[in-house]
Amino acid sequence: QVQLVESGGGLVQAGGSLRLACAASGLTFSNYAVGWFRQAPGKEREFVAVTAWTGGSTYYTDSVKGRFTISRDNARNTVYLQMSSLKPEDTAVYYCTASKLAGYPQRPNQYSYWGQGTQVTVSS
Image (cartoon, rainbow, N blue to C red; front, side):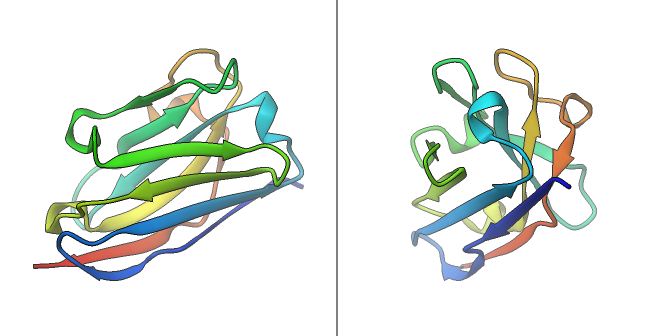
């Protein structure tokens, strides 16, 4: 049984930082592209970042470039999202997800497995 479990969310002031973690069981992250999506109230789920399974290269949506960093620790079967210079518009539930596709999948329907999400709230 595959499980993705996110942690590290919380309440932070604008300009602050948080590090999200996504731990997997039942699958090996090194064989998957792993992405982070977010969903704010009343909005569609949107792509944030992905680390490709081939070489671990990364891709980000424009609004988080230079502020967020996605990384892997294959030995721990965990993927991280380091978020810095947070803004109120980053407030959302953040989801970890895994895909067998090569490259940088950016649509929710390209992913097979999802975590339950972790809330990130940025106050102004």
